Image (cartoon, rainbow, N blue to C red; front, side):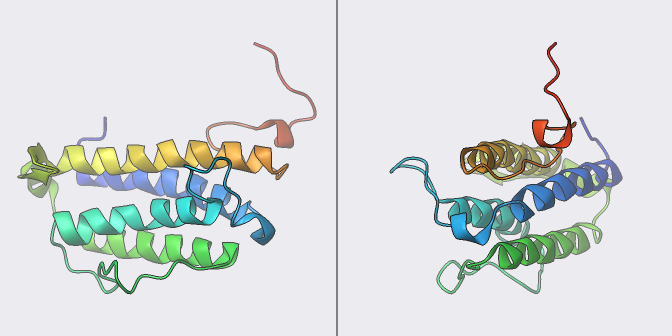
Amino acid sequence: MATTLQEILERYAHEHASTHAVIAAMPDAHASFRPHERSLSWGQLAWHVATTPLYYVSEVFKLPTQLGWDLDSARPPTTTAGLVQALDDIYDEIVGALRTKDDTWLDEMTDYHGTMKEKRWILGHVIDHEIHHRGQMTVLLRLKDASVPMVYGPTADECNEVRRF
């Protein structure tokens, strides 16, 4: 588990790069793909992944960001390039806001859906949330026969053969 702010930012940078690659892999034609009536569409899921960290930084931690958090006026991009740009812009905002803090700030307790948690724990959970939904997005890529990029290792699209373990 990352314990310092620098370690958390390094972990977030690594996970962000993988999420960027996964979102960038979906062709625009499939942005409205929804595998089940109760599921989010690809575009909605990508927007959720992009914006959730901004919610926690600006609303839960009350750190100033230029983008802010406004559910009423937030409009998801309609293209893959727009979703990737939003993801990157939000990532830059979050990292900039967090870099104004130090390790002692991570020890502070704050409300997390009615339970008091350390900010360190919340940031770890936000990163885990991104990982969880990124995994869902890789399945959606496969269902639409799009190439699945490497996340923690090569995918079948990046190897000449599927390795059996």
